[in-house]
Image 1: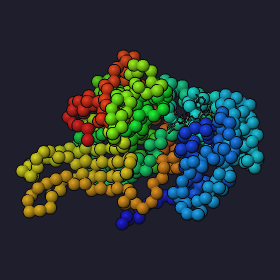
Image 2: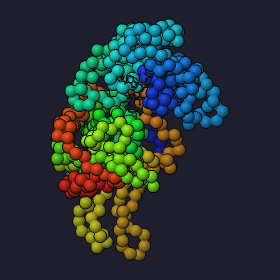
Image 3: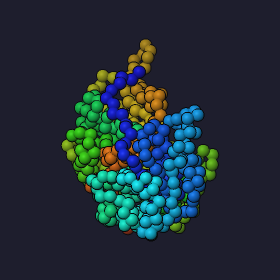
Image 4: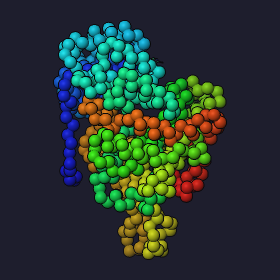
Length: 498
Ligand SMILES: NC(=O)c1ccc[n+]([C@@H]2O[C@H](COP(=O)([O-])OP(=O)(O)OC[C@H]3O[C@@H](n4cnc5c(N)ncnc54)[C@H](OP(=O)(O)O)[C@@H]3O)[C@@H](O)[C@H]2O)c1
């Protein structure tokens, strides 16, 4: 049983909208964007008048595009016979236009096709940049030249959705922000970090600020360390070309894990308004000193056997340059230099080719003082709050408990809130939530430019040093826990990875 609490029901955004997917032939469009739009459609969360228009260089008819779109649509929100009907209705609103990203003429023709679809009525527009960042600017300029983009604050509105990577260090990120601002003002720019759309991550502020119990203990007096882990038991899987130029710190740590850290450590925002939440996140990120090289461990997966199958090492993957020192694993210790967190290490790690697939946050509390139960305890124990982001979303509080029986024996037990068991609802995909926010104009889960700059400031110097000094990553066998040096790093801060 769950007590009903405050609720804010999502509502169908107002006004007609065209959702343009630039790079519509790609993986992201197929796997995430179109299925998320269909999920919103099934829940009556798209405006009455809408169209989805795909744009890319590949040749495709509308029918072929619809065929491609169908591949990943699911009936989660519309089981039974109605699903087929809903799919047909949705696909009838999907169109495809073939063109070149750097050709203003292609975008002029796109406009000619779009206006009749919009019934020549003023229509809001979302431009989803599902393309590599190298073509963002060409596309943005061409959209503007073709008269497809309105100014920030105008009605109908135009909004651009941009996916990471947002540059590869502070200066390239600044340059991208400056360039894109020629076309889209900051309040029209929705920089996606899809982790922020995940259910458990959205719950972090609720957990912290809607429960009195955590408030007095959420600080250096009670928390010994915080651990954030991202593990994948997969290789770079055909993305070696992209990954090798980028590495795990840029791919996962500097964005997803830093965003999680910010939500764990930030102060209470004045309100739930996007500006107030993002102001607090920026303040927190600015309180984190640059990461030092001595507080970073890098690794690279080597050949190994995982689940009985031989797995190639990173250097054997197609597209990886000989002798590459790109890390597929990294662990780092960060500090937050403020009154709440001074002296508390934040240990973060991310790796591919590991022995698990999960994202988890662990708040490790200090040892309970006193000797009352020393005879019944064999080792010091700490309470832990574990927030499992994926898979199998859960919030687990590890407490000391008397093991039932005549003997006074203590052991760790878990108060376990497993989402699957506790809530009989579909957990929405992050993209459903984020796309709805774009349509509603809610920017709170998107990365503001000053937030992006603050996040890059933390990692840019160490990334440059790793590259300039060609720091050799420690090899670890595919399917292992990661490099041995990671345990040593945690040990230097008086703890171990949990
Ligand atoms: N897939 C994911 O889960 C994911 C996750 C996070 C971020 N992202 C980001 O989201 C964007 C799209 O991801 P994606 O996985 O869909 O990418 P993708 O499949 O590699 O590319 C999307 C489309 O862009 C076009 N394209 C590819 N390389 C190009 C190039 N060098 N120059 C011009 N056009 C090119 C291709 O379409 P045409 O050849 O038909 O034009 C392709 O179908 C990227 O910025 C990516 O970094 C993706």
